[in-house]
Amino acid sequence: NPNLLVKEKVKINKKNITIISLDNSWRPRRAASDLQSFSLYKSVEQIINLCETMDSNKISNYVIKSYKNRGINTSQLYKSHFNNKVSDKPLNKLYLNSSLVICTYPSTAFIEALFKKIPTILLYPEDAYYLDDMFDNLIRKMELEGLIFNCPKKCFNFIKKNHNNFDL
Image 1 (cartoon, helix red, strand yellow):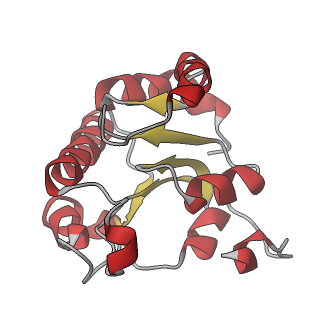
Image 2 (tube, rainbow, N blue to C red):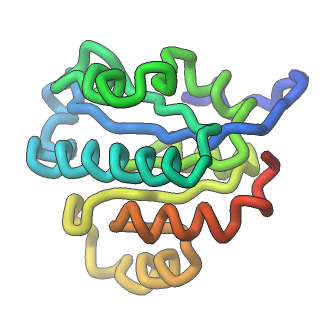
């Protein structure tokens, strides 16, 4: 959304870890590139594991952005576990309060958060996406730098290690 790339003159209070979740597309032409049900549930499982680990380690300043009434309705799945942590706010409002963004799929939201100079990482199931071999070196470098995670435990360890470096 190009409107999200416009610099806004709004007071920013960066205190939350924002987790942006995926649901299946309602647009048939995009459905072919979406995660299939198994991978989508695996992604939901990763987010639930990450949030439970953060909760048990007293890191509770996170919100989950999911899209309700789309696909398998992951919003309801998250609300059943973390009711008060699921946000219906638009992404541009959530970015204003984000000290870290965790995207669960390589998407526009990932680029938007980076453009807004918010630390941003990816957490998604291994082999969930077909990536062209020409990107193998880039993916490996991003994994080594702590930008891509396929394991919620490793993602949490990164958050815990760097928690004080985020603008919380």
